[in-house]
Length: 625
Image 1: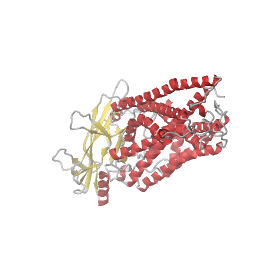
Image 2: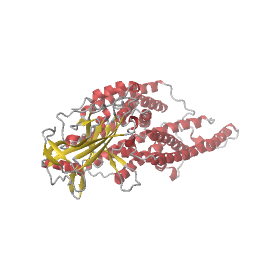
Image 3: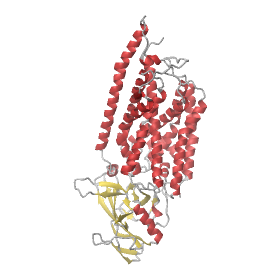
Image 4: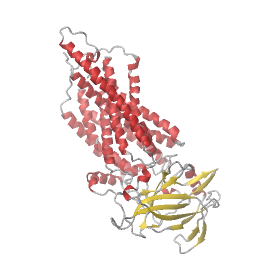
């Protein structure tokens, strides 16, 4: 029933340049006249406990005569969304009380399926006018604010008994402004799930063939799966007027996360950045200026004293490092991820990637990563040329296939695990083919194009020549050992992002909405500055101790923050998640490994580029014989 992902990808690529000129799908408001049919759609069943989504009709819910899929984009396919029609009948401004949807006689396999889903805490997701259903949770403490949860539980497990939510109360809010438009706009959609044994009687006038009496309260028996096999699904519809306008109807969902902690996060990150900026400023303005002045005075003096410090290694500072090809490829891949992140955030800040566009964020990231291949090739070739290498085709092939290949292999393996669980989260092989088309058909040629332009340009001019014979490095104290300094260096970039990382992981693993792109853009700016400054500081201290092997050190001094990201994900797993299934654990750590790998390349590339620029500047400022 799924649409061709290759066609979806082609349309997405073709339509990207005009996106700003038209209403994007799901953004243009719909006005309903009174009595008009309002379609309720169903989405996948999700669980924070298993991380394995399933289609709505995997459970024995009431089915329409014909199940129809909604058009899905590449992002929706990758996250396992399955938006389908439902038999619910809702009409604008028409309230309904205890309407029977259908009656099902459950066999033992269906009862066991319900029990398994309830035990794994699966949530049912519904959509009305592109708004997801929200369940309101009010705390017994009146001081606590009301919280909204996306979707509602399929049932409740209490004292070893399984109770199904078989009666839904839809609370729909509308807004109208006769001076601005005709009709009514839907601005809110809440669901109150109930478990009850309804009193049914035969009624040929009703579509389902039954009418029912639904009574709420402590005296009403709950629908116990072990005590009943005849399951009736009923629903209420209640329309209320709201002053909330259509443009702000998503505010309810976006309030699911508090803003004060984000400001604390920004303040914390700014303090780290100011501390690092102060350190780098002290190096540049005080120590470095003094060094340069002293070295120039020595060079112009007839009685030149023996050189000391970082000037001593001027003949080796730009010496080609070991595994220079891999370093250039790593920096190129990091530039590709940085470019994707920056452009994605710009689109998000402009409002193109609102939660109303399901899958738009992931689809945009995929497409932008593909197009950023040209910048990856360019930066890789420019850096690789500094090392005096000329096998640019081999380096370009490595850039196009090494890190993307690692990501694809891990993703494919994880997808096989999901497919083995018969989950809707398994990416179809046709979609996998569409990803390969993006990779081989667009990304690889763009990487070669960028690499070609980079190698065609003149090599970056270096301020000092490299000696033929390498200089011996004096014995170093333990606290400037590469492993120690790199591990210390990674703490500060991680400290700049760890609070925001908590909210991003909650949105991924606990199915919460994330739309704080303003905060995220600020955090990315702080991260870039912090990575650059920590790499510059550690490179300077390394050169002053007459150690010129700074190339890889400058990469790892900021890239080691990815290790802390992965360790933080392990702590988050143990403290925040209740995942028990082996497949779900492997999924979690597999995807967190991919996230850490991207962070590793991003931060490492920033550190290397910043240190290279810094070293060029300082050695260009002194007189060398």
